[in-house]
Image: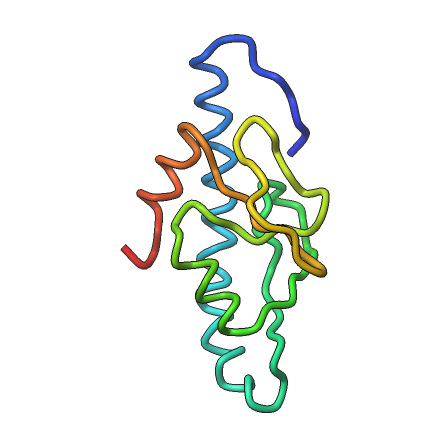
Amino acid sequence: MPHVFRSTAEEREAWQVRVASNQSRFREVNERLEELNRDFSEIIPTGDFVCECADTDCLERVGLTIEEYEQLRSVPTHFAVRHGHIVGEAEQVVEEHIGYTVVETIGAAADYAESANPRG
């Protein structure tokens, strides 16, 4: 999803919601992957998760331990994305890690991310 500045507040809000909707879909996939990764965590400590960026065509992976994943999920507006997969109009960088960045959705994107949180 290319970074495009929206001219009106309404257009920016709609863009932010689309970004968060895409990220939330990837978060749901990762919730399922967590179960598989947890089963193998004693053998393979770093699990394979999908990048939770806004680009629906992104197929890149993010390596996280179960503890890192749980910490990420403790804040419903946080997502793990590959470096450079950031949409400035809808999110801000919270933390940089080896292999991934934690972003926090802002504005309407944050509202959507919280409402779509599979953990309630």
